[in-house]
Length: 413
Image (cartoon, rainbow, N blue to C red; front, side):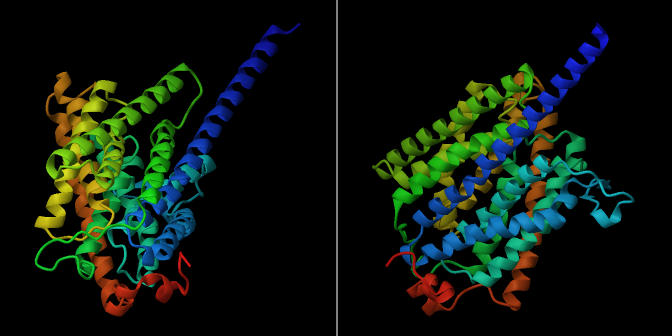
């Protein structure tokens, strides 16, 4: 009997099986992240008024459908194509030979691109022209998100410096939020939001909002742990378990911090702020979920939930920026915060672990660079849309609801 042949066959089988396990894990994670899309839809619909529900749901469906096509055709290559000067990836027609594409990785990255785009819809909800949002979603997933993503995940200049954003606190969440911030400022607040003071405009269905947050929390395990991109072997499975734990602990701590701070400030335990506290904890831990300890994850969540309450108050009452669902504070402020906190809490290189200021400085630089890119490019895009097809619906449509005028149907009859 040829034992060498038998061992070679066994090794080949084990290698093939291990590769299959990795692919299956990435695809399962892809499905979990895709399921976050209805989570966003439910949360955004719940935090806004019933007359605009169909519009919110339509934009979330649109983000995923448009994002899937545009990221496949253009965005993926800009993000992961052969690097050009650390700034951008080559498009297929620029390559001498078309690069081989890992289809499971392509699908995984597609759902991330759709997530970045859909964050914007909440910040500009209840007063935005649907056709303008359609064009914005196309450009976001085709160009804006992939280019800054290339800097970090595609071998670009920030990755060369050692910037760490494991699953996208900055790559995904902050980019979407900064674009939403520009949109909210340029489109302006909803009618009746600021009449001498900042007026609350309650959402119509906190049941939807709570369901959406639970779906997002569930899907986030795929978002973060799926970014390990492999499940074969003890090292990968240990890493996945660690990421599950840090993700969950930060979310729980963010929930409790937002609950406690809002209770002390407003004398009641506020559900809407508590729900956004859960998301704040999830966004903040996303950058460093792989390299911070469980104890640090709790601290990151507590900081995120606390920051959320004060950031909401500052953006709403001081800056007077109307963000109906809290997207800017949840994804922007806490995306930046979580990324910077990696520089403090990373077990290797973090300031609190004797690593000095090097990693912290790189994290701050990355946050600022990506913010500048997202703010600048989205400002140009929104301005173009404003002077061409228009950004804001007429006052009558806004007052009576976007559902019937924009889509010819209502969510409720």
